[in-house]
Image 1: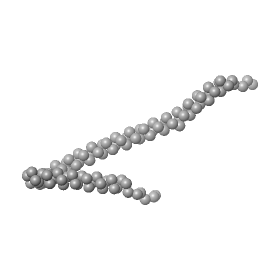
Image 2: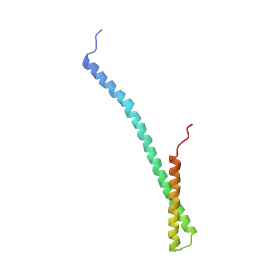
Image 3: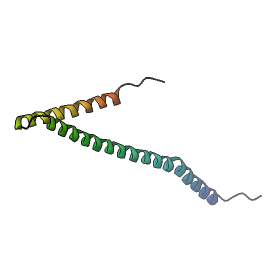
Image 4: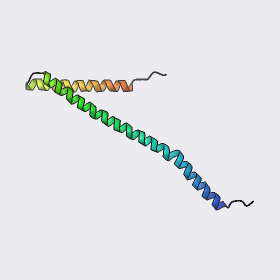
Length: 101
């Protein structure tokens, strides 16, 4: 039985190494990139939603207060304070320690 030549063995080793690296690195990286892309998109959509809800809340506060320049300024302060407090509460909920299952 004839043994394979050394250049042929080296060529097979290189081909198998390339296939293994592609299988173990490229495919998982694609999955991670897809997950990161969806996560960034979800974060962006949540930020836009929060901005729109904050503007709606501000408009509600301004409609409830009397029409005056001073009351309008107070409405903006109230709207900004509520938006900041809700954002801080959401950050607190996101960063609190989790209980083990």
